[in-house]
Length: 243
Ligand SMILES: NC(=O)c1ccc[n+]([C@@H]2O[C@H](COP(=O)([O-])OP(=O)(O)OC[C@H]3O[C@@H](n4cnc5c(N)ncnc54)[C@H](OP(=O)(O)O)[C@@H]3O)[C@@H](O)[C@H]2O)c1
Image (cartoon, rainbow, N blue to C red; front, top):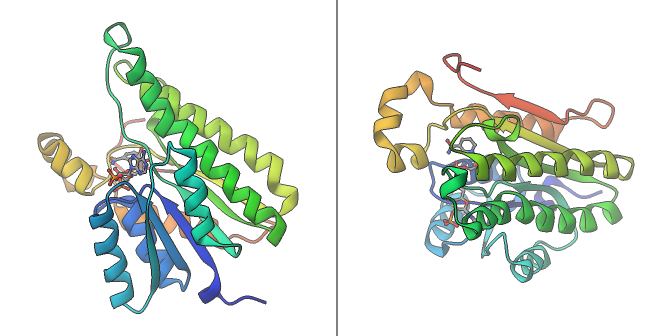
């Protein structure tokens, strides 16, 4: 029987401290898992790892691009076999109208939003099935469930990721792998929105931005569920959201 301490979690798509990836890492490290955090920027990953270790947790950083197969393979090699949790959180919003869109832009959106999820999910189940199970979670958005004018590339990528997650949930349930998908329906109250589109964050106000800790609670809920009561999908929004 392994203790929580020897169990590993991988989170792909970790950026600034006030972002979902970093907050997930902090919470699961606090739960006693050794978290392996991956993203493209070494400095932000290292700052996070130092913070987690300073709090008595265990963490390792790996610089990896979710869309590059060799990076994903190397990331899972670092994690080793006792992989209890894997979270695919990468995926940037890619606005733009279809008639104006370069083919490469659409493809890039799909690569990070969907294809990267396939590479990541495949490697996760390759480790989890032999160990008798694990939890594999994907981060979704409003785009996962509905198309919206001006966001076709992002919508297509996130919808594809959701369908992949659902197929995997059915394909690997009997092997003990709990696959879940979290629909984040609105803007997150983190650095991304506050720094990239401050006027939009201002317009929404604190009450209109989704609480990071509240989202993380949902991932922990999914991770803790017993095999006889699994949830595939959670949606999270503020009380102000019109949907
Ligand atoms: N922000 C929102 O309001 C919002 C709303 C709904 C849903 N979501 C979803 O929530 C998730 C996290 O969003 P967040 O905005 O809070 O960001 P975050 O969790 O703070 O950071 C995600 C990080 O993923 C990394 N990343 C991006 N492309 C990558 C790639 N190809 N390979 C590896 N890492 C990559 C980026 O860091 P590097 O640039 O350092 O690699 C980015 O900072 C995303 O899936 C997003 O679609 C966000």
